[in-house]
Length: 64
Image 1 (cartoon, rainbow, N blue to C red):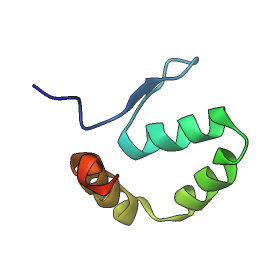
Image 2 (image 1 turned 60 degrees about the vertical axis):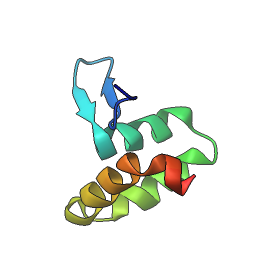
Image 3 (image 1 turned 135 degrees about the horizontal axis):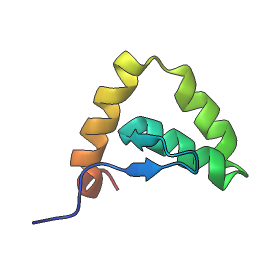
């Protein structure tokens, strides 16, 4: 069994975020140069963002 293919975050208010929504939230929380990146990613419609996130998460070792 390998590492999970998705990111999950439970926010301080108890919301469960997963995959691309969790990634955007984490980029916001990290701040700095990550915050503009989170805005850029958020501008992409979820209909496109989710499949791209899922593909990248499955192939992250090949990509990076």
